[in-house]
Image 1 (tube, helix red, strand yellow):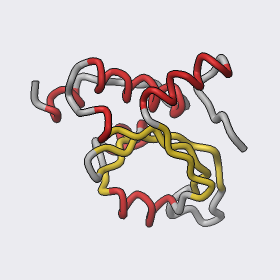
Image 2: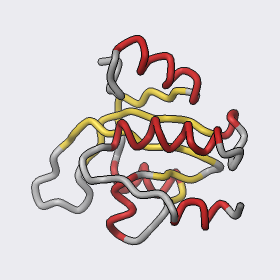
Image 3: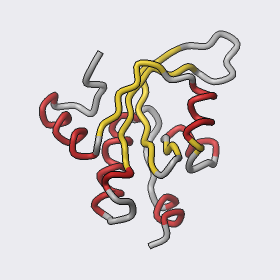
Length: 118
C-alpha cells in the first residue's frame, strides 16, 4: 500500500498526542509500511507556534524518514513536516526518542502512553 494513502486512512481525536504517537508507530510497523529502524516515537516540550504569548506543553510525535508526523497536523490538512521545519516551528526541548519496541515496553511498564520521563 502507498504510504500517503495509508496515512489518509488514519484518524485520531484531538488531545491524544501520546496515544497517537505510540499507536501510529506500532501500526506503521505492523502494517510493514516503514522499517522499524526508521520510526521514532518522540516526547518533548514544545511551544505553541506563532502565539502572541507562547505556551510550552508536553507533546509527542513520530519521526520517520526525515519527516515529523503529528496528530495536530491533521487539523491543518498536512500529513507531515520535514523534521527541521517542525523543530523550527515548535522549538522542542527535553527531547526523548524511543524505538517502537521501547515505547511499547514503557506503555506496559507505566500503564499509560506517556510522557514517561521528566
